[in-house]
Image (cartoon, rainbow, N blue to C red; front, side):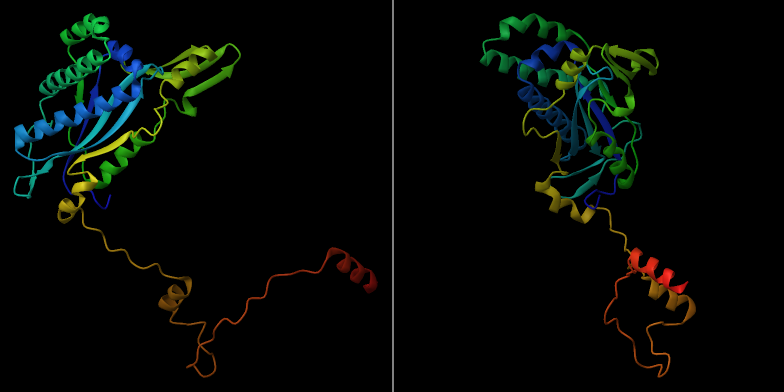
Amino acid sequence: MNDAMDVKYFHVVFTVPESLNQVCLLDSKRFYSTLFECVWSVLQTFGYSHYGVESGAICVLHTWGQNLSLHPHIHCIVPAAGLTLKGNLKHITKQGKYLYPVRMLSAVFRGKLLEKIKRQLKQNNQLRQYQSLLDDVWKKPWVVYCEPPLGNAQQIVKYLGQYTHRVAISNQRIQNIEESGVSFFYKDYKDNSRKKLTKLSGVEFLRRFCMHILPYRFVKIRYYGILSSKQKDLIKPFAVKKQETKPIESKQERVSRLTGFDRFQCPFCKEGFMHTVELLPRIRAPDNLLYKKHQSDF
């Protein structure tokens, strides 16, 4: 949070159609990397074209839906600011609710991602097999979700924490585990986000859960543009100023401040101070010795 800029931030979510899950399962590592590249390319392009600045983003990959189905999407936190060609920070002032036009984001994102996927499939001699699927996906509208500004740096760090360490399903959502299967709750977004209960066999539950185990050493949180480590020094002058923290007051300092009495001062000369020489450990006599002593008293 010390490196966060004191500007507004927007939450943007890039999703892909369910039909592309077939392509994703061919090589999930390559697909997710391509997804990151296209998301940042779109945000960077819109920063240049709309405001003439080098933008930035914190991107977090999620791969699951509420029912543990494969649903790759990337959550992005985008600051309403950027660096100009002269190296000055430019604040983006928006009268509307959204940082960029959502429909334009969707169209450009669709074009960039499908172009890269076609190129990769062509290299693997698989384009003919999936050409009809890609043609159908191109005809459908894609979904890019954008929220109004989220607030200051403290709020954005708290908000982002909800997405960084999530797993496919939490223990709270699982209602019961038995031989016949696993029962868990999910939100049905097609039915006004109502909470519903579903049940999967043990094998199917594990199959869906394992789909969301990311490839080895894959980075699911990435920083781009002015929020990357390479440009961290450039935005330091615009970061949120640290609040001066008061030193922690000890119990003795608090007693002296409230009562004016210093228990370490010599009570006789009122000039010298007593110092701790040794701390004697707390001990007690063994139980059998105490028992013998009580017997001798009688």
